[in-house]
Image 1 (tube, rainbow, N blue to C red):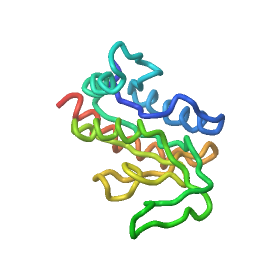
Image 2: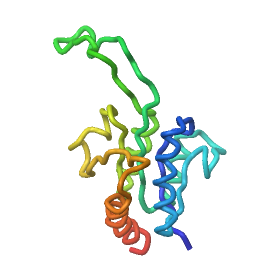
Image 3: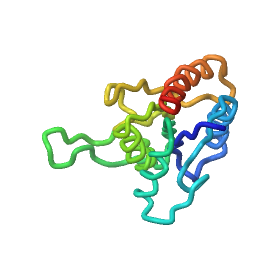
Length: 164
């Protein structure tokens, strides 16, 4: 029997992003873990946020995949405050569901594994916000051995949560 783990990931991805997601899913499969995600493996019969909680409760860990879903090329940070600052260049943002789902998983005490694309910051993707190290998103042509080691360490905690 495979151990269920929640995967927080947008459903609309570019080809490159989908290739990176596939790397993660393939590693999960190879470790006998069952990826669960709202809109992919599970479909809501209730309010979506409530459904996330139901799925998360049945999982023994979570993987957060912070892919760029919106790019701003103009704007103002913290408008009307002393910290107001014009955007210099561009800013990338993940799905807001990444933050909601990560918060639910964290509050349930599930072991988390967090990945982010270059440029993704804020919330769960900021170093030091949780006790979880934030990893760079796997590269399609990158070394898989180091990545697998990260998953193996996390998998030990997931197994302990499942069998404990």
